[in-house]
Image (cartoon, rainbow, N blue to C red; front, side, top):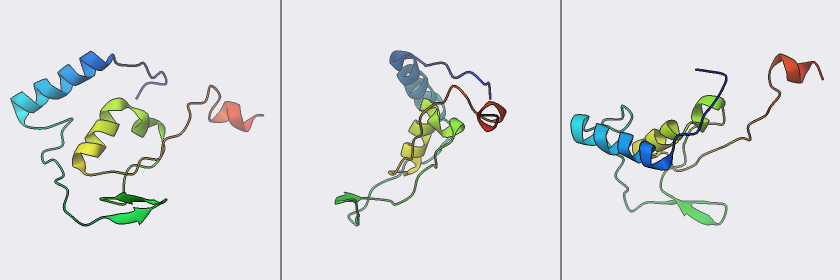
Length: 93
């Protein structure tokens, strides 16, 4: 993974998703979409289908990984802010 994360235009991202799904039947490598049942769990005063999802980290911040996670059934996303200083630079402060 590169140190630089560059945004993907929404149209390009959706074209990527639909083209892969039509050709391969997958969405970013996920073969089977999650199908919701009738059971839900309470969380923060709301209801959620599945109480799991990706943890915050640079790789999970990528749009394609968020889409793949949702397609696979994740419904709880922990996102973090992008920092200009990280790693050794942050430790030196």
